[in-house]
Length: 411
Ligand code: ARG
Image (cartoon, rainbow, N blue to C red; front, side, top):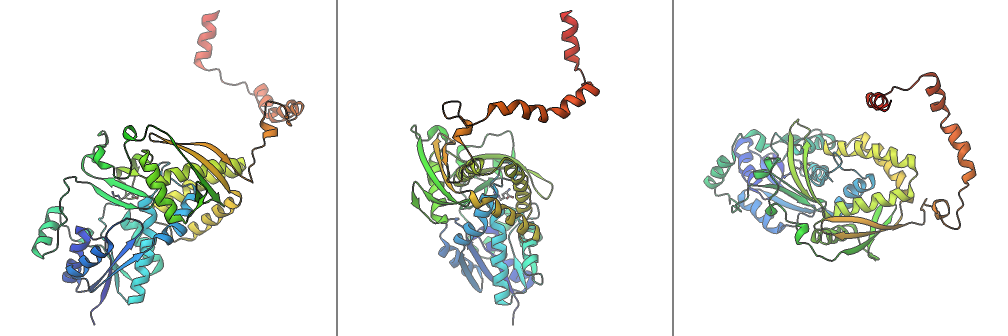
């Protein structure tokens, strides 16, 4: 019996060529697996193409629900953005894909899993580290990293073996998309000084061309998870899809980032993440109201660690499970409603409420009903400032140059 390999199949040129190339180079039968994480494609056409190009079997797995529940919501609860800006749409889909590929490989008794990543990116690391964690005995093949073909060579190879080459759109961008956002790189974007041309964007209106009238939207959260929009309960997939459309219409979620790849390269990427930006903004504002100061601060550090480990492909690790447990614990009172104003590229929180709000009007108000005991303030300041006073008496503070000069002039 011929050995089998499970290939992560997108339907694009590289993975189509890979079907033939793996058969020739390794002699394996290829099982093509295409994973639907909200990348809105004609999946039956993708499946057909895999079979036509020579796969012995082609599966399409609808993983949208699992993607939202087990991957996107944990990231949202953590409030993680890689390097403070990137919502990690591409990064967070990889462990789920790797998990499904490993499952198919084990079920089919395949000897290897293959992916179409090159040797310069993060995705190869994410796939391989995850597959090694879940199916350590399965080999990994990375055709696009091994074959040493340029894009032109690949097109020639495809033509030679009757593999359909996608019609050139004229724009040399590399894109990836799913429910959490869209990633765009290459072409003119490789010049970090070049402003992204409008054609780069597919999900967001230019803020200049977005509606002149602001729109409001209310998101209900239950323990950190968004459950309704404008009072209508929705499942996660429907909610995120709706918000991508709504926020995209108002030009929200465009991100231009020069990021640090795990493999040591700085790369310029454009992201569109309307729903992610909206939800992260709303969620943060609800936490501002329901978490204590120390919780918020410590959680922000965890969010950064969490972002790094997702970006670096370390999802299936004990460390990730431990951080997730902490994050879940922080969310037990993150329940309430956030009101957002969407207008010309910005998404602003204009209202928030929660049954667990720590905001006390009686303590905050400067008007009637003030419950704050101002007479306790001097005692508080006396003790709080005690070490400062003590130290400055014994160890006089540095006088800055400007201080000296201005004193000199004044005399
Ligand atoms: N730089 C992003 C990441 O590593 C996205 C990578 C995929 N981007 C693309 N345009 N194909 O997560």
